[in-house]
Length: 146
Image 1 (cartoon, rainbow, N blue to C red):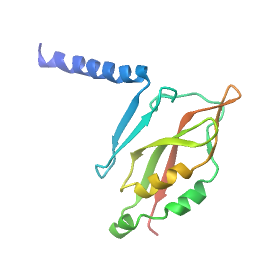
Image 2: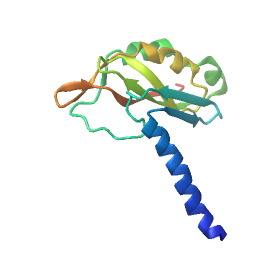
Image 3: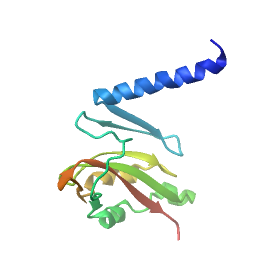
């Protein structure tokens, strides 16, 4: 097989492997942030696919974002190093509006302080067909030095 024919077959093979995991209801998402720190989120068969778009009538709304943000503060090591930026997190919000798990998919610094406080986030749940549903929601935490 020529080198030109290998890449499409490799991509197809990888795609089949990824989709077979989704079909089994087991998701392990590994993300490497800007510092090479890896985060893994494991979901169950009943959880929605974190990469899928789910149309809802109403997105989940954080109820206590400001309180959680205040508790996070500014990570001391990032502050000392002059590091600024956004920590972007996908949070799995349950039908009752509670935090279930998360994936940090972008961070200019180690996101430990954010990750420690994420379970304290509370939401109004997403609504689909008039009923609360479990969905992934993107939450952003800005870190800027004044």
